[in-house]
Length: 217
Image 1: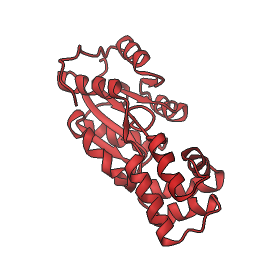
Image 2 (image 1 turned 120 degrees about the vertical axis):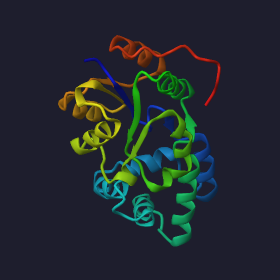
Image 3 (image 1 turned 90 degrees about the vertical axis):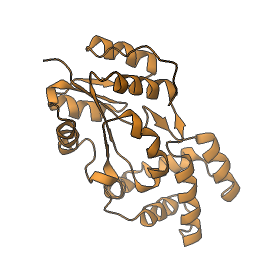
Image 4 (image 1 turned 45 degrees about the vertical axis):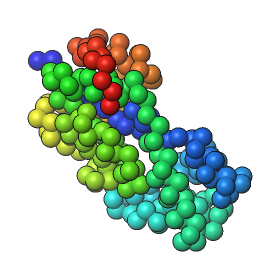
């Protein structure tokens, strides 16, 4: 049997941070701080275990962002933490790759495939999650489910929720570690680079994206 379901990642595939807006907001509070510096601090090896717990809903957001501020050399006072969280809530996932979202919506609307999301996330991503409701049958965000990629249980949970099988479910993600984990479970995968390449690779795997109806999402 061929593919019966398609699962999309969100961050780095469908949505990204509005870095220009984040840079402007950060600079008003901390003149030499940039979104790139915040991302680098979040990716420091010593921060990853806390991020993993936070993204599974097991570490408080104030604790996490306070640790990020400390990593940046900024006193994590409550007002500073609140300001940083406000910037992240407004800018994380606020920049949508419209062609990719439209592709996902058209696949969903055609009805031949079940569609889902599997994305590592956190509570401060919530303001932007509602825009995905109408384009997917199932939404699995790590801070809601407690399961994050590349843990095999995260993939298995969303595939089961979609009523599909691992070998019949296409998984799309921008990170090699996540597509490799899916492939190790027998899932067909595409490592995302851009919308045009994605459409071609999906078609090669039997998931042709329908033509646009002219409606927007």
